[in-house]
Image (tube, rainbow, N blue to C red):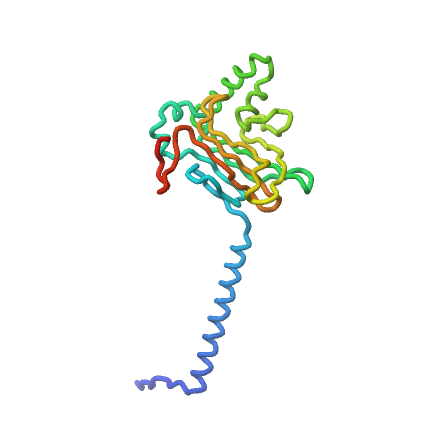
Length: 218
């Protein structure tokens, strides 16, 4: 049996090989650069917000949730709260120049039943339907001015479009409650046309963050 000697690459062959390698590397780099640019142009992101910052945005959606660190030390609120989280998203305002914000509610265990009962008691004095109490508790608005889901999973609230990211003249309120008239935490949110949501201000009952971002009782 004869053994063939290893093939020797000529200078011309090596040059051709290096040219192919360089071309392939350039194509990969261009493709990667295009993906990165696409990611940068993908628009506002979804933000999880735990009230430890006073501002946020832009974001297409913001999920507002009380941090576990606080829940563990607030037995009364934790056991009687209505929500696990409330998510706000920029919504269609109808007209091209109008804005709106959609609220989506994730209820704590038994939270929806407690809220409906509390809302019913809240409007009993005025002899109004429970939806009016629900509109007040969920989005702090009059029922006639919003779109309210019959199952109370979401609500859509019209709002004037903000002029800039720090424009806080026209905002909606998102509130974590454990009674219709008792708020544990709130945030004020604005929306810019085609730019997303911005958190303008926040408050948490009896809690604040220090300069290191750690929660302390205020």
